[in-house]
Amino acid sequence: MAVRIGISLIAWQNDDLPELTKDFTTEGAMQDAARIGYSGVERGRRMPADTAGLRAYLDRYGVALCGGWCSGNLLVNDLKTEKAAIAAQVEQFAALDAPCIVYAECSNTIQGDRGTPVSRRPRLSRDEVTVYAKKLSELAKWTRDQGVVLSYHHHMGAMVQDACDIDWLMAGSDPALTLLYDTGHLHFAGADPLAVLDRWGDRVHHVHVKDVRQPVLDWVRAEDRSFLDGVAAGVYSVPGDPEGCLDFQAVTDRLKAMDYDGWIVVEAEQDPAKAPPFEYSRRGYDHLVEICTRSGLNIQP
Image 1: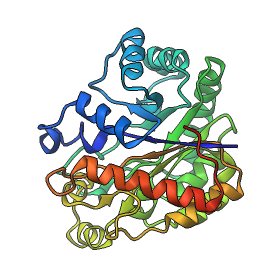
Image 2: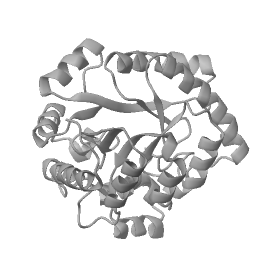
Image 3: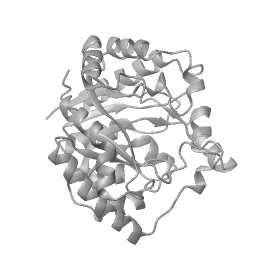
Image 4: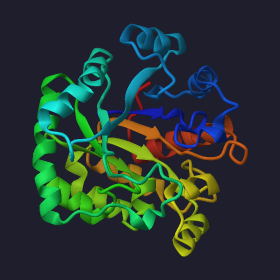
């Protein structure tokens, strides 16, 4: 069993708040990530779209493709339509040996709407989530048959956000559907990240790590602000930031205990004027190496 440490380039290239990162290039971000020591990067929108071009791009910087976001619309699409919509990404990720597709339902999410408070996110009943989970299971079986695991991303502002939503989704779905476990989104949602990992560790296939600045989260809640307001104000940071409130040693200890074998990806969107991407990404990497080693996790280059 081994883990690999990757990063999302969102600290340098924020697609939801592009004005924050307008002074940074994807090429510079790739150079920084490789120089720090990250083994892989998740695909960003500004990377080459074609498979051959993306492969050459990754090879140029000596990193692997360790996943990437997929905006799902299965709630409103039938299964055939959704397969057609994501088929190109599935084929590309299979060709590049990506560990998974990071799938999130976006047909009704408010995560990208800065004018809508996160408190107004869509909510489904357990029966509605169960119906959705059955459709999603069929999609996950199909992507698996194409050579790519589908990992569902619970996300702030989305219909699967908190621990209850995750319980309903996992309980109502086939094991072919795996879970992307995200520490920062769980804490933001009011969930206990360790409790979720204890309950659904056998379904976790991909891990995103980001810390939370509790005073900023308290402000988002008190002022009823949007998810993106929180991001711009610095609600998230990297593991190892003394301003963060999460215990990542406990997380890596749990991952070791469950024999986790996969990627741990730093994904901490911040304002680079306040949190220089290279400095903070290096801090996150160094902290992960330290705590993974202490937990007894074998880090694969």
